[in-house]
Each structure stands twice: as structure tokens, then as C-alpha cells.
Length: 65
Image 1 (cartoon, rainbow, N blue to C red):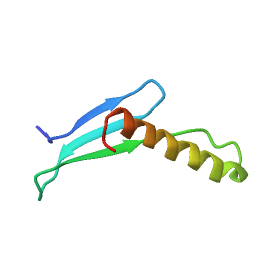
Image 2: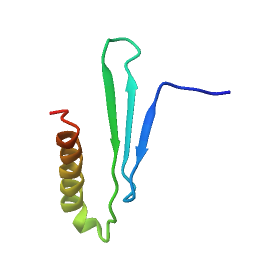
Image 3: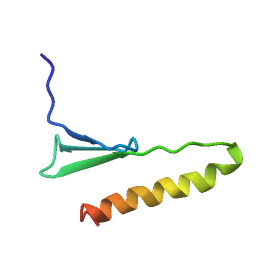
Image 4: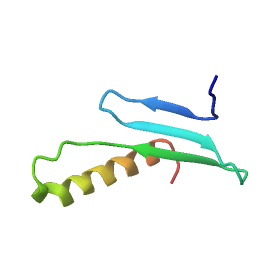
């Protein structure tokens, strides 16, 4: 049986928040997965900025900043 020290939350919009302890330091690491549709390559920078803002919002909600 495989196991790991990871907690994951999946939201309705496809966001994933993963939390695990560091393997080498006494701290907890957070990983965020966000996604959004990209209708055109021309929209890349705009969508990237929106996703960055979404991650920053999650970090603020979790009081990580």
C-alpha cells in the first residue's frame, strides 16, 4: 500500500491545494494548482496574471502571506 504525508483539497473550479511537511526542514510546504481556459495564445499573459492573482488570493485566505 502506497502512502504519503500529503493533504489535498480539490475545489469545484479545479483548484488543488496540496500541503506536506518538508523532508529536510521543520516546516510545512504548500503547493497550488490552478487552471483557466486559454482561448487564444494572445490571451496568455492576461490569463497568467489572473491565475497568479488567484494563487495570491488563496495564500491570503489561508493567511500564508
